[in-house]
Length: 572
Image (cartoon, rainbow, N blue to C red):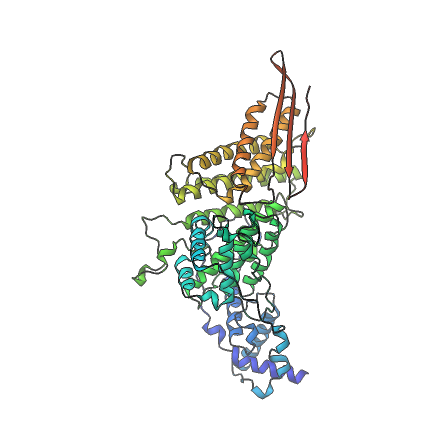
């Protein structure tokens, strides 16, 4: 056994010996998310990062075909092996011998048939007819691409025209996911599920064909096999199985991490377009991981401390390839990039991520170092940091993304509304845990309920005006609409209970606006809060011009059959 190990080690030496001298230093990330608070740990040194890259390059030269293209970090056994080989190289002056093929024991070096899983003939995908496929792809660009710029439009259209989906099953999965999403905005009855006329079934006939778990993980993932995950998450968010979206995020992130997409310098030696597509897919999963985990109150699959991947380049699709090679991937200075919105949205999610790691954490790691702060003082400091970060974020938005109710309809008008809705949702998320329960005093000096209510009102008025003005349905706005309605109900009930001066009718008018906006999505979108507030009423009995009784009744459906009455309040 020791002889085998020695032969094995000596064989690796020659194949790996020249690596460190050829490994080049990577540039610093082009864009980095700024930290909200100082970290106690220093960032990894340049030499540590180079060591990661060196290990990856060494593995490319190994005879382990199933490890080629894989990423192994500092704590891995492969890094330990590299340290041993480095020590051996130093000892013998770099004079190592190449391993002989005869010295390799195939049972340990080579993949066997059973590693690849059982042979099976996959069921052929059934795509829409060509005319419907063309229509659905156009609807995808119109309703999704400007908000979640996952795909590169020219490349996707070129691959589709070449019928790549008929030969590459991973690209075929991406095409089916695009069709599933776009079906929600199609009036063509062919997108509906078999033998049904329900518009809620739109797209499911395509989505149900997709295979998310491969028979074997031996082969390295392709960018198409990663793209299907954020597309699927977007689709599942608006179904009765919205929790499945949260589940699908994890495998997508793991798939990308196997080849080191999460690390800076991932693009070395790869085509620039392909690298940008990897980055777009990974960052979209990080965005969904943050927002969905926050919405469900569950841990994230990702940790920003474990990644240093640059944000996607702020360059629109049409400028990725230009007649002049010097202008490739350069956004014209006079033309604002549509990806600016997405970069700022990612930075907003970073703030949400800090809220998860601080005020919502099960075990809080103190970002300020050892402290004698009480729990209330600690929360106060965390909320102040979050409020400050949110204010800086909104102030940093460029003019073309700042909200303007008089702006003509454009991509930037819709992107602006989505950013501001996200901002108000973040404000409510930060202060919501500190809304005092009935009979309790606030643990913060902030009026958390008032802050949440003001954010909800501002958000409702903004979204109501946008929906009335542009007559467009943006599914991404449904979660903030729902949150606003619930916060306003809490504020109404607490106000009535506290017997403070309150115009219940005016408050309910704002809640009714939420119901009206959600109703716009009923025929196509289900959502986990489908029918969330099917009825909300306020009854006032007046005697001698003075309200003596107020009753608020709200019915909530969580799922297709369960009805919960949130509360009935009587105050005489």
